[in-house]
Image (tube, rainbow, N blue to C red; front, side, top):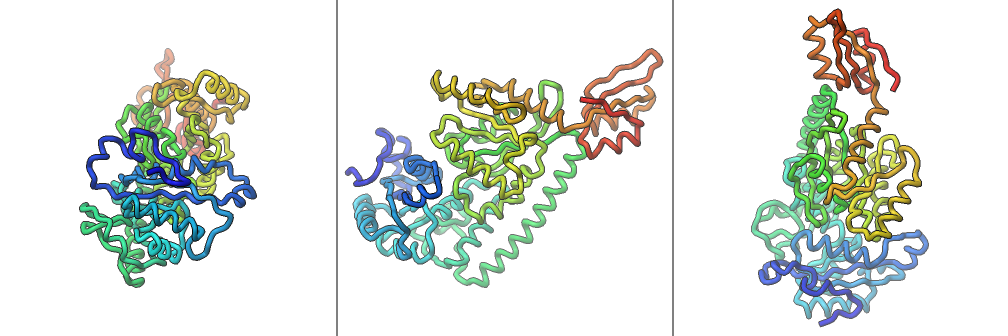
Length: 460
């Protein structure tokens, strides 16, 4: 049946699921509802289209293996305190839920506990909001101890005000915790005191993890490898770019939040310099505040990075709105998104553009001057990789100090130390057997090398 006021998924996908999943019959059936406040959007100048929001909401549902049996855009003039949606739409959706035998309704909006309970009564089905679904996705994607702890902390903080045990009819057998959990899941404690105790315990464990990560970062700082972090909207192609640059095999799929835990690999630039490349979790609009706070330790890889690559999907119709969302999260992390010396915009997925689109994109990029100029690339085909690597080398060189060091050929210990703690750019030996090296180091290390070796600064 065709849903009134809804948009069906493309033919051949059976309302959004890949064909190989259609015959299984074991996935929770979900109706996706995307409310959009038309008047507020006009007042606030929101540029994200309702259709793009619906596509993203369906993508979130598919990312957690839900079977999308219906999807609907609902225009609102105002939010209803009791049910968020108007009474007419609530009745219409209830009819769709019953007809499609859906066990879950995903409302892509922040619902209060009262609104959630009232909608569950009206739909006779479980209702979750955007925050709950994103937390559930993160719960499934987390693999490291730190990731699992961070998701659970965000989950418990979200649940603290709700304190309900109504998730058990949506079953899955594997262990863990979550909003869609079943017999194999750890149940959310119904007592506020128990939740509080668990939160305190997790926070203590995360502090230990944070100290361990700080030690790892301190160890890396002893090695002269700059850190380059990838950030961007979820599904912008960060992991594909990471794999292309590092020849790694990090999970990279056309899927929202395919990568959660950070991954670090060494990359050698054309100049011979080695850097540490860090792939981080993708950002998204209206990222739950609980997750921004909980994942701050993970995102410290971004905070501490020498250079940040903002990867953008330039084939997406809402590329500008997505960039704005990423910049907002960076600002929450106290990173200035307008700092052109520290950030490079990487305009990805140019392979998806037609000839006219590519021409406009390259012309737009060329009009920006200096460090503000973005780098158009295709992580999938490899186009633009040489230009990107050269830009990384050039930008890192601007932030580092070049020094000239003279050594006796017999000073093997000093030579070994320089190779371990600096980037040796040039080495030559004169007729008297003395070594002359040109090295590059972060500014905070230059003075120590000047004192120890009598080094002289070289103008870049």
